[in-house]
Image (cartoon, rainbow, N blue to C red; front, side):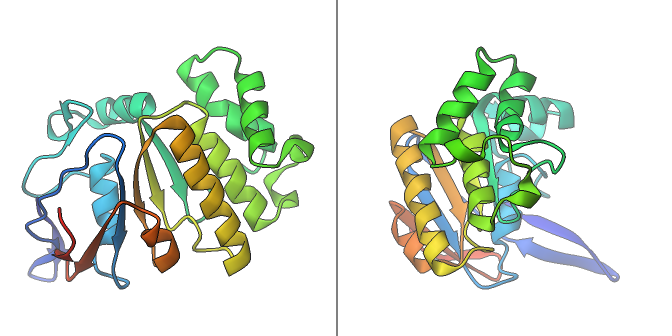
Length: 216
Protein backbone atom coordinates (compact mmCIF):
# COMPACT_ATOMS: atom_id res chain seq x y z
CA UNK A 1 0.00 0.00 0.00
CA UNK A 2 1.23 3.49 -0.90
CA UNK A 3 -0.03 7.02 -0.38
CA UNK A 4 1.21 10.05 -2.27
CA UNK A 5 -0.09 13.59 -2.85
CA UNK A 6 0.61 16.21 -5.51
CA UNK A 7 3.63 18.34 -4.63
CA UNK A 8 4.95 21.03 -6.94
CA UNK A 9 5.41 19.51 -10.38
CA UNK A 10 5.51 15.97 -9.02
CA UNK A 11 4.21 13.88 -6.14
CA UNK A 12 5.24 13.48 -2.52
CA UNK A 13 5.31 9.95 -1.15
CA UNK A 14 3.86 9.86 2.36
CA UNK A 15 3.66 6.07 2.74
CA UNK A 16 5.55 3.49 0.66
CA UNK A 17 5.28 -0.30 0.46
CA UNK A 18 3.17 -0.76 3.59
CA UNK A 19 2.16 -4.41 4.03
CA UNK A 20 0.30 -4.85 7.30
CA UNK A 21 -2.07 -7.39 8.84
CA UNK A 22 -3.80 -6.86 12.19
CA UNK A 23 -5.42 -9.94 13.70
CA UNK A 24 -8.69 -9.87 15.63
CA UNK A 25 -8.13 -9.11 19.31
CA UNK A 26 -4.60 -7.82 18.74
CA UNK A 27 -3.18 -4.55 20.06
CA UNK A 28 -0.76 -2.69 17.77
CA UNK A 29 1.10 0.56 18.42
CA UNK A 30 2.38 2.68 15.53
CA UNK A 31 5.23 4.96 16.56
CA UNK A 32 7.63 7.32 14.78
CA UNK A 33 8.77 10.91 14.61
CA UNK A 34 6.43 13.67 13.45
CA UNK A 35 5.93 13.48 9.71
CA UNK A 36 6.71 9.77 9.47
CA UNK A 37 3.18 8.97 8.24
CA UNK A 38 1.58 7.57 11.41
CA UNK A 39 -1.71 9.47 11.28
CA UNK A 40 -1.94 9.02 7.51
CA UNK A 41 -1.63 5.26 7.97
CA UNK A 42 -4.28 5.26 10.69
CA UNK A 43 -6.64 7.24 8.46
CA UNK A 44 -6.14 4.79 5.60
CA UNK A 45 -6.73 1.76 7.83
CA UNK A 46 -9.97 3.36 9.04
CA UNK A 47 -11.15 4.22 5.54
CA UNK A 48 -11.04 7.96 6.18
CA UNK A 49 -8.86 8.17 3.05
CA UNK A 50 -7.92 5.79 0.26
CA UNK A 51 -4.44 4.66 -0.79
CA UNK A 52 -2.85 5.79 -4.03
CA UNK A 53 -1.88 2.17 -4.68
CA UNK A 54 -2.75 -1.08 -2.95
CA UNK A 55 -5.88 -2.35 -1.25
CA UNK A 56 -7.19 -2.25 2.31
CA UNK A 57 -9.59 -4.79 3.78
CA UNK A 58 -11.65 -4.12 6.90
CA UNK A 59 -14.15 -6.55 8.40
CA UNK A 60 -14.17 -8.61 5.23
CA UNK A 61 -14.83 -5.65 2.92
CA UNK A 62 -12.38 -3.99 0.55
CA UNK A 63 -12.42 -0.28 1.35
CA UNK A 64 -11.26 0.57 -2.17
CA UNK A 65 -14.53 -0.77 -3.55
CA UNK A 66 -16.74 1.38 -1.29
CA UNK A 67 -17.74 5.01 -1.76
CA UNK A 68 -17.50 7.48 1.12
CA UNK A 69 -20.98 6.63 2.41
CA UNK A 70 -20.21 2.92 2.25
CA UNK A 71 -16.99 3.35 4.21
CA UNK A 72 -18.80 5.49 6.79
CA UNK A 73 -21.47 2.81 7.20
CA UNK A 74 -18.77 0.18 7.71
CA UNK A 75 -17.05 2.32 10.35
CA UNK A 76 -20.38 2.86 12.10
CA UNK A 77 -20.87 -0.89 12.32
CA UNK A 78 -17.36 -1.98 13.30
CA UNK A 79 -15.12 0.89 14.41
CA UNK A 80 -14.61 3.21 17.38
CA UNK A 81 -12.29 6.23 17.56
CA UNK A 82 -10.37 8.11 20.23
CA UNK A 83 -8.65 11.32 19.14
CA UNK A 84 -5.97 13.53 20.68
CA UNK A 85 -8.34 16.52 20.72
CA UNK A 86 -11.26 14.53 22.18
CA UNK A 87 -13.70 15.60 19.40
CA UNK A 88 -16.63 15.98 21.80
CA UNK A 89 -19.64 17.99 20.64
CA UNK A 90 -19.49 21.17 22.74
CA UNK A 91 -23.26 21.67 22.96
CA UNK A 92 -23.91 18.17 24.34
CA UNK A 93 -23.37 16.98 27.91
CA UNK A 94 -21.00 14.13 28.70
CA UNK A 95 -23.95 11.74 28.79
CA UNK A 96 -25.37 13.02 25.50
CA UNK A 97 -21.97 12.75 23.80
CA UNK A 98 -21.72 9.09 24.79
CA UNK A 99 -25.34 8.35 23.89
CA UNK A 100 -25.04 9.84 20.40
CA UNK A 101 -23.30 6.93 18.59
CA UNK A 102 -25.86 4.50 19.99
CA UNK A 103 -28.74 6.72 18.94
CA UNK A 104 -27.32 7.08 15.43
CA UNK A 105 -26.88 3.31 15.24
CA UNK A 106 -30.35 2.61 16.61
CA UNK A 107 -28.96 0.85 19.67
CA UNK A 108 -31.19 -0.13 22.57
CA UNK A 109 -31.22 1.64 25.93
CA UNK A 110 -28.71 4.36 24.97
CA UNK A 111 -29.08 6.36 28.19
CA UNK A 112 -28.58 3.40 30.48
CA UNK A 113 -25.62 2.06 28.52
CA UNK A 114 -23.95 5.47 28.24
CA UNK A 115 -24.41 6.17 31.95
CA UNK A 116 -23.00 2.76 32.89
CA UNK A 117 -19.82 3.38 30.86
CA UNK A 118 -19.36 6.89 32.24
CA UNK A 119 -19.69 5.50 35.75
CA UNK A 120 -17.14 2.84 34.87
CA UNK A 121 -14.57 5.51 33.90
CA UNK A 122 -15.29 7.47 37.09
CA UNK A 123 -17.55 10.16 35.67
CA UNK A 124 -20.89 9.21 37.16
CA UNK A 125 -20.95 12.59 38.92
CA UNK A 126 -20.26 14.53 35.68
CA UNK A 127 -23.01 13.15 33.45
CA UNK A 128 -24.70 16.48 32.82
CA UNK A 129 -21.61 18.67 32.42
CA UNK A 130 -20.70 20.20 29.06
CA UNK A 131 -17.19 19.52 27.71
CA UNK A 132 -16.01 23.05 28.53
CA UNK A 133 -16.71 22.34 32.20
CA UNK A 134 -14.56 19.18 32.17
CA UNK A 135 -10.79 18.86 32.50
CA UNK A 136 -8.75 17.41 29.65
CA UNK A 137 -8.53 14.05 31.38
CA UNK A 138 -12.27 14.00 32.00
CA UNK A 139 -12.96 14.87 28.37
CA UNK A 140 -10.76 12.02 27.19
CA UNK A 141 -12.54 9.62 29.53
CA UNK A 142 -15.84 10.75 28.00
CA UNK A 143 -14.27 10.07 24.60
CA UNK A 144 -13.25 6.57 25.76
CA UNK A 145 -16.78 5.84 26.94
CA UNK A 146 -18.17 7.12 23.63
CA UNK A 147 -15.75 4.93 21.68
CA UNK A 148 -16.66 1.74 23.57
CA UNK A 149 -20.41 2.28 24.01
CA UNK A 150 -21.23 0.69 20.64
CA UNK A 151 -18.96 -2.27 21.49
CA UNK A 152 -16.83 -1.87 18.34
CA UNK A 153 -14.76 -4.76 17.05
CA UNK A 154 -11.90 -2.38 16.24
CA UNK A 155 -10.71 0.77 18.00
CA UNK A 156 -8.42 3.35 16.39
CA UNK A 157 -6.70 5.75 18.80
CA UNK A 158 -4.70 8.73 17.53
CA UNK A 159 -2.37 10.10 20.24
CA UNK A 160 -4.98 9.49 22.98
CA UNK A 161 -2.71 10.97 25.68
CA UNK A 162 -1.13 13.68 23.51
CA UNK A 163 -2.91 16.59 25.21
CA UNK A 164 -2.67 15.24 28.75
CA UNK A 165 -0.03 15.55 31.46
CA UNK A 166 1.87 12.41 32.40
CA UNK A 167 -0.21 11.56 35.48
CA UNK A 168 -3.55 12.08 33.75
CA UNK A 169 -2.30 10.28 30.65
CA UNK A 170 -1.34 7.26 32.77
CA UNK A 171 -4.86 7.13 34.21
CA UNK A 172 -6.40 7.29 30.74
CA UNK A 173 -4.06 4.52 29.53
CA UNK A 174 -5.21 2.26 32.37
CA UNK A 175 -8.85 2.87 31.54
CA UNK A 176 -8.24 2.40 27.81
CA UNK A 177 -6.68 -1.01 28.29
CA UNK A 178 -9.18 -2.04 30.95
CA UNK A 179 -12.06 -1.32 28.57
CA UNK A 180 -10.18 -2.94 25.72
CA UNK A 181 -9.72 -6.17 27.70
CA UNK A 182 -13.33 -6.17 28.86
CA UNK A 183 -14.70 -5.77 25.33
CA UNK A 184 -12.11 -7.91 23.52
CA UNK A 185 -11.54 -5.10 21.05
CA UNK A 186 -8.83 -5.02 18.40
CA UNK A 187 -6.71 -1.92 19.11
CA UNK A 188 -4.58 0.10 16.70
CA UNK A 189 -3.06 3.25 18.14
CA UNK A 190 -0.69 5.99 17.09
CA UNK A 191 1.42 7.41 19.90
CA UNK A 192 4.62 9.17 20.91
CA UNK A 193 4.20 7.71 24.41
CA UNK A 194 6.65 4.84 24.92
CA UNK A 195 4.78 3.63 27.99
CA UNK A 196 1.55 3.45 26.01
CA UNK A 197 3.21 1.69 23.07
CA UNK A 198 4.78 -0.79 25.47
CA UNK A 199 1.35 -1.89 26.65
CA UNK A 200 0.52 -3.17 23.15
CA UNK A 201 1.31 -6.67 21.95
CA UNK A 202 3.16 -5.34 18.89
CA UNK A 203 4.92 -2.08 18.01
CA UNK A 204 5.62 -0.87 14.48
CA UNK A 205 8.10 1.94 13.88
CA UNK A 206 7.51 4.20 10.88
CA UNK A 207 10.30 6.27 9.37
CA UNK A 208 10.01 8.16 6.10
CA UNK A 209 6.69 6.49 5.34
CA UNK A 210 8.04 2.94 5.69
CA UNK A 211 7.87 0.35 8.44
CA UNK A 212 11.49 0.08 9.57
CA UNK A 213 11.04 -1.99 12.72
CA UNK A 214 8.47 -4.42 14.03
CA UNK A 215 6.63 -7.30 12.39
CA UNK A 216 3.92 -6.14 9.95
